[in-house]
Image (cartoon, rainbow, N blue to C red; front, side):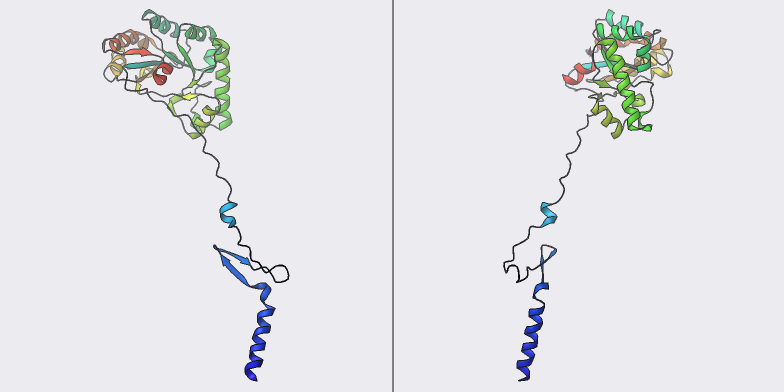
Length: 261
């Protein structure tokens, strides 16, 4: 009789707790549906799989160009910080006399002041690129400030040439992800260099020439300046650089020609 009573007590306890039985499934706890609603336990969809937020697609940033392909004997001469009425015209005259073209990365405020020189750069067959408005280190300023630097400069260059620039060189070669993102938004390809002549420091005409001729190789991008200071040594070195590179078998091209084949 005692066993029967004990069994009845156990049965009553189980019936009373029926609606609160817990089943563990796929690392989550799901209550079993009560008998009052349905006796069919539908296998739940694991929310930790199907309800996970989609991962945003990674932003595609423009690759920073340091040089072109080494498969062809081509080299690009580039000039920063102009236009400068004391030097840019002389550089253009030298390029024209050798029937070659170069790439000019212009400062916006200089282009505003000397738009005719920018227009001539383009008209002579050279390529004009964006070098910011007033030459700040872009890695030290905000994203909106970077955007303003690039937007204002591109607008002035387009006004002078009729062409929206597609190339961009950050001052000092200083670039980070924020700078790349802002350049990408404005469809500007960042371009640095593979040979720095250090002409800005006025090391002497011979030193500028040797910096190029002693190290030149296929696909190199040469950094020189037509603005930002006294450029008499650069102008004196330029014919020697052109002749020396040609004697070594190199063809002098613009940056777009170099990187686009």
